[in-house]
Image 1: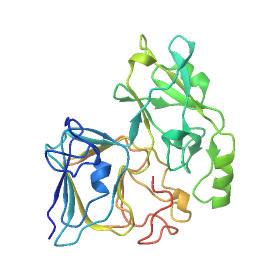
Image 2: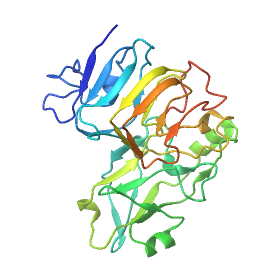
Image 3: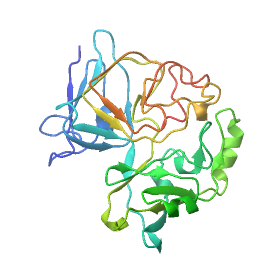
Image 4: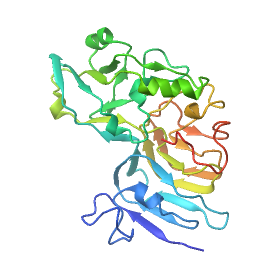
Length: 287
């Protein structure tokens, strides 16, 4: 059995994703280690905050599970966000806005331009965090202007639920949709002095293909994704059920001593995640 241990340590001075993953030369990201994982391997994650989607290249076997484990429980934080430092435009004191760059979403799905089935219009699928706190998303600019600590998208959102045909999704992606995020900061706060994060991925931890098993998550903090609701997920690939932790119709997953929080809107998906997403094939809407 291959019992290789892959070290990830974003705070190590020699950390780099091109490294072999040894304790002396660890990976900088969990995603880089996940791309190399094989049955029997353990990814050992040192304290720190790790951003973006983690896609396990494969699952394990009964005699050789794959494991993602925090060196110290509760100190390895995996987030579906990116730090956001846009160019802000000040409207009035405390009320600012900035454009959301499409380059933040390499898979092409921009959660800030869509609301999912079951979501109140016109609230989108994203999340915004300032100095560690999740801000409340409201429906329009007038509501945001009245409530510090809130935000909204300015412009049209695509109201496409999971039952809609794929052609309509393609039409919506090419349509002129909302791109400006308006934010009402708390009293005395300046956007340049705040730490902002945008949720950008649907699944924070998942497998590259469906039906993988013998996966163990141990002692991790998993948080802050962007996602649609689960209504009608079975019928269309772009609406497939996607939790912050996604087992993707897998089996024998063990999630032990983990904290899962700030999910939008499913924390863990178990069971089938959609008729259009066949076992063993990559999901075209993986992130």
